[in-house]
Length: 225
Ligand SMILES: O=C(CO)[C@H](O)[C@H](O)COP(=O)(O)O
Ligand SMILES: [Co+2]
Image (tube, rainbow, N blue to C red; front, side):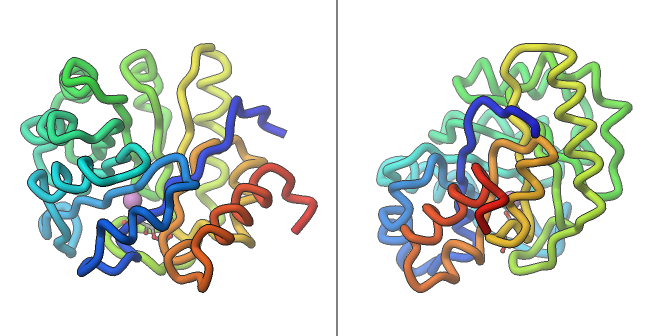
């Protein structure tokens, strides 16, 4: 078992009703975060929303915003999302030119800094970036769309990141995103993840609050499900 300090659920509003985002955020008030997927139609073949919408959401959200930037040139844009009110800002390492400078700029703007890895991106070359980071996001689907199948083979990377974090000490969270649901979250927790993004598993459920509670339970005690 990975002994993570705390388990946190971050529902992705990508699976919410975009016509009623304020209401959809209220529905996840028992979660720890609201995961906001920012896509620019360049880094990924999909387009969602940008800083003005994040700024509006931050004003009404009952939980802090966890912004996952799937965009080109995060060096230029990431600090703006912190200034817009996101409490955590994640850039993709495949897109960033200066990961240290970008992570520092995010922190200087008052947010937690995080780095995301696509399924084909190894963690090894980036281990020295850990001191600049508050979280590492291991993608468990190809970024771009919700509702995809969980990639089991990414659990090895989750274990590798958790081991590196443990060796280094300090509190750096390990997040998983993509296909995280009742039947996969336990294995993610066992591998060492402690922040779980779930879009369809939360907003696709009939009872959103119950889905969050069930995910929390399954992450804390995988043997129960
Ligand atoms: O970053 C993402 C996609 O690129 C989303 O956060 C993720 O796909 C969540 O959706 P689901 O839980 O339905 O897989
Ligand atoms: Co995401």
